[in-house]
Length: 172
Image (cartoon, rainbow, N blue to C red):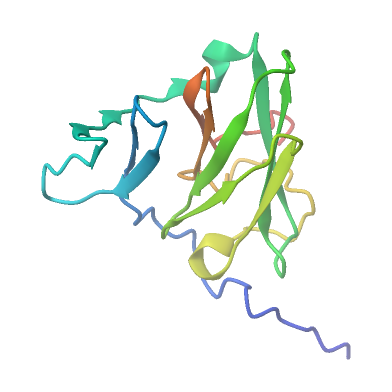
């Protein structure tokens, strides 16, 4: 009998976890271009920078700006090395993505980029690594294991862009 190796990142969940991570809010300073984000708090605190309140960013939906940038993702790795790969193609070479943030069931991850990057990979663990099957890449079946995850990209000219991970392949 073959012994199977289990990754320490592998989810131990037997059912899809519920989304526990509160909404995330992003703020921008119009004077120095500083960015800040906060996860839900009960206070009405608005961050300040350069002596003024920062502007709350409202995300664009990726479908609304696909004439300038196409953003896509893949769920990869199967049971033991589950991850989300986010990649994009810009129609204009002067676009500059500053960061990509992945909101998950239990929290979030942020990656800051240099201008030459065209993709990032977010490794998942614990509840966030839950998958229904071991397909690599994900078949995007009706179970939609990562529904509730959200990708946020910030581009200097277009602002904040939001992509929900809710795609389902019609062949399943």
